[in-house]
Length: 58
Image 1 (cartoon, rainbow, N blue to C red):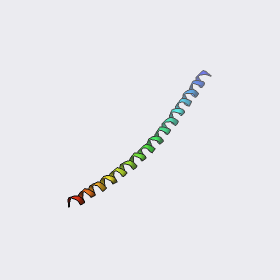
Image 2: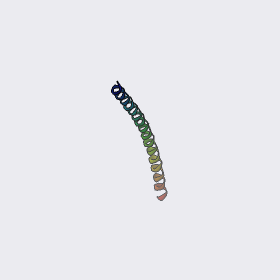
Image 3: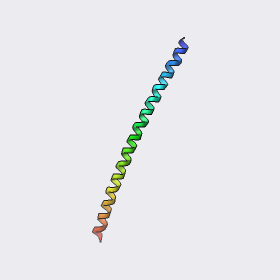
Image 4: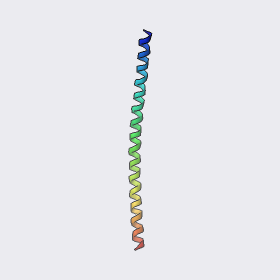
């Protein structure tokens, strides 16, 4: 019975680890989306600044 209990405990521990890893993956995916959005926003702002500088040089 002890061996069976150890196997069940190990299985439960692994299941918890998988659940935590899945949660971490979702959190990382969300962070990646936020960063991509931020990069796009900064690129648009930079593009506007360079266009303004081009007009000033003419």
